[in-house]
Structure formats: C-alpha cells, structure tokens
Image (tube, rainbow over all chains, first blue to last red; front, side):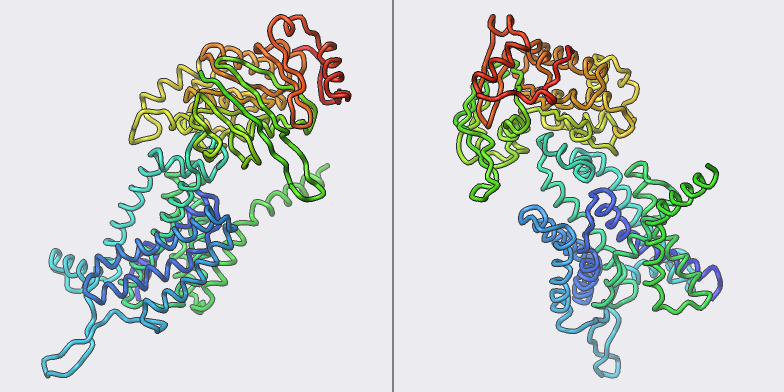
Length: 318
Length: 267
C-alpha cells in the first residue's frame, strides 16, 4: 500500500471513531462524569445497525443504532439521578447488562455479517452482501467522477466526514442554547444549576443520552463500513475515546466547548494516524490497547511530572 | 416581594442514633413582605439548617414553608429556586468557574427570561451589562471572562447579581461576606443593601458580625438550639448595642455566646 492510501485508511477510520470521541468528550469533559456505559453502547449501536441493515434499511439502521445508544444512556442516567447509584458503577452496570442485550440482538451469536440469503442465477442458495450507506455513496461518487477504481477509504472518509461535520456543527449550536448551556453548567457546578431553578438531573440525563447516542453512532458507522458487527468490539473503546480527546487538547487546549468539539474530532484522526504509523513499523495489532492505555496514562500524568520536575529544579537552584 | 411564613419546622439529623441532633425545634417565623431580617446565633444553632429547610435541601420531619401564599413544603429544591435567590459564604458555590460571567448570568436568568434560542443573546446581554455597571467594579467590560478568573470579591458581587437577576420573592444570604477581606466585604454589604432596597426584596441574612446585624435590615433574630430565642425590631432594636444583644442572648438561652466566632469589630 502506498503512503497515501495508508493515510486515507487511517483518516477514514479516525472519522468513523470521531463521534465516539465527541461522546467521550461530552461525558468526561462537559458533564465531568466518568461514564463507562460507552464500551457497551458502542457495540449496541453496531448490533442494532447490523440487524436493521440486514433487514434492508441501511440508513434507518444508522439512526436506530444511535437511538439505541441514547436509550442505553437513559438507563445509566436514571440510575445516577433517580436511584442515586454512583456514576462509575451505574455505567458498569449498564455496560454489563448490555452484553446480554447485544448478544440477543445478534440472535444469540457473537458476530454477524451484513449479508442476506439470496438465490443466484443457477438457482442455488447463496449469501449476498447487504446494501450499506458506504456502498451507495461509493457508487454515487463513481458515477459522478467516472473513476471506477476510486479508493474505498476516500469515499468512506468523505461521507463519514459529512456526517461528523453535521453532528459537530449541531453540537456547537446546541451547547449555546439554554438547554445546552445548562448541561455544561451541570458539569461545572451542579448546585448552581439547581439554585437557578433548573432541573439538573434532567440536564445530566440529556447529556448522558447525547454522549451515548454519539458513541453508538460510531458503532453503527463502523458496522456498515466493515460489514459486520462483533460483540467484543467495545472493550477498551472508552480508553480509545479518551486518548483521542486528550490528544486533541494538545492542539487546541480546552478553553471553550466549540474548541473542545473540534479537538475531539481532530484527536480521533490524529490517534488513528499514530496507530497506522505504529502498524507500519510492525506493531502487532493486539498491542493497540496497551498503546492507548499508555497514551492516556502519559497525558494524565504529564502535568504532575512537569510540576515535580520544576520543583526539583527550583530546589537545586535554591 | 412576598411574605414568608414558616410554621413549626422540625428537623433532627441522624434520628435514632447516638449522634441524633435537633437542628430545628418547632421553629415558627413570619417574615412580612419587604422585611430584611438579620440572623445571629452561635455555631450549630441551626441558622444554615433553617435556610436549607426553606430551600428544600432536605425533607423536614414536620412543619410548613409558605412563600407568597404558596405552600413549598413538598416542592423539590430546584422548583423552589424559581422564586428564591441564595448566596453562600463561599463565592465558588454559586458560580460555574469554567463558564463566562455572561453565561453565568444567562443561566441564572433562565428561570425568568423570555424565550430565546441562544442562551446568550443581545437583549439579555444589554440588560446584564446595565446591571453589572451598577456594581461599579468594571465587570461590565469583562463579560467574556471565565468566572474562575475573577477575584473572590468580584465573584461574590456577581453571585449577588445572579441571585437577584431573576427577581426572586425571597433572598437568603448565608454569611455571604465572611470569606472576603474587610474592604471588599463592606463593599458587597453596601451592594446588598442597595439591591435589597431597590428591588424591595424580602430578605434573610445570616451574619456573625453583631454590629452589622444591628445596623442592616429592620429586624434581628437570634437562634439557639434550633429555636428563635430573640426577635427584636423597631425602636427597641434601634437603641440596642452589641452589649445589650449579648446580655439578652444570655438571659434568653441561659448560656454565653461563643465570642471567638462573634466578631465585635464595627463594619
């Protein structure tokens, strides 16, 4: 593969995971709540999308996937607010429960390919690939440009990019509305929100639903792009999202919510580029999670290390 | 401007344990519309508990909270906040540090603002700028500054605006100048006085400065062990000195005030 196509593949993957990074950003940065539902809702989005796509509705599949994620967020949110379950534990409970739900959605198996039974020209039973958004869009681009050898990753990058652009723009606007601002304030100082006569519990629930809808949207997009859903795909997804958000902050800082949204998207792209580079120097694919965890750990401890170093230097000079 | 009527409020924390503590003991108080009451009392007298009972921060064991003729007793805290503004000692408590001054005000104003798509909009911002100008702290030029970047005094002044911007019927001040340096504290007290007078708010103010308690407002109550042990107003209060107040407290409650907390220096 040429460098160009490697980069394209990394970018198209990064774009698919960008909504997930946005979801993590909303949960961890905006709401200031560690939400572990994310690992489960990613797979939920995948599974729901797979089933609906196989039934013949690829676009509805993506919407249903995202909506299912919002529902998962609702469950976690209700646990946190109405039942007073600790934030981390409520996410773990939903995530654990979702494993069973996802397994059932996939019809009692651990993975599902986007194909359906058909009869071929010879009259024999066979499996054919389902239509997906990515297939449709590639055909559209091919017919527009006349380029039959159009890179799959390029068309995927364009269509996912459009969706992410739309989602990010909508989020930027949303966080300036009264509801959006109240959600941000809930993450910043919940007591102040309550004393402003705003139902902070409701704001928290809306925020968690939104975050998980975005995460599930990523799962749905990935499902259509790679043409299968897999139960194991979610594990460690949260760390991947955090790594993206943190890396984005290196470039844009965390001054405003709009910059935060941009940085989450860019972070997701950069993260995949780094992974692609690591593969290029023969990093085995199973090393991804360790690398992600190391990146997050490093980013979290860097300020502390810096401070310790500065103190030591000051001590020596004194 | 509304009347606040508290009837027979009862609250015992950690009931049924050895740590059981009676925080409100059949407390009744009527605050006529427009009254400005200062609240004194030693630590643990139940002053903040009284405020929290009015704000609905916990369930009462018994009693009734009525504001402006509406029974609030069964309403959740955020619903009561529609018509109650509150300010605490800690300036951090009433503001969102990572949001701008403008956004903080917009959020506080949300409960009474006209419908608008964006929370921060030209109409409201102009209103906030006028309000900030009355503080004379130059904050009207710092509306895009993050709240956390402002000094404690600036934050507390802004919090005072946030607590009153939505024109509450009742304003509760819980030692809101105690964490400020004397000069800033005096300024915030002045602002409090003028805002309360201008908007003719019904107001309760907890303070540990007896001098200020006598000088501000039109009535002073003193609490001990979850009850009101002293309630003075009018001529009697005008003639009262800090010494009189201490003596009266000792007579009524049969114990001395903890003077290390009750600061006697003039404000």
